[in-house]
Image (cartoon, rainbow, N blue to C red; front, side, top):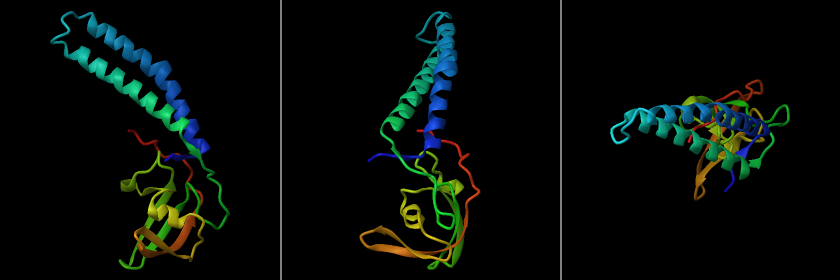
Length: 166
């Protein structure tokens, strides 16, 4: 399975990779070098902390490069009256008689606790391409699911959400 990313996601990821390679990597190597110079490495907490930070930075670089390499690029454009990527959508859950607002984002920006849901999630998939007023069935597996009604679509949300860490 390939992660769906927009051109904007890829650009942000490339900027983070460049920053980590040119700035963070240099700082991490300097920290390791300084900690190593303090002598006995068997009981040198600063050395282990510096190595851990360096390795975490290198891991993040590899993770981002792999995400870009295997990504399926999706468009964040949609019709003026349809739900698309980076749109805030107010939905009414029929069974619960509750209204919630979600922003449809790519997997690299998803954070359900902040109301950011992936376009690959069951709810995100169901909402994409629909219009305000539509009653949409959200399938959760095996033919089971629930209905939501799209109350409103806000196209002005933008794509300034943080990229997910790993």
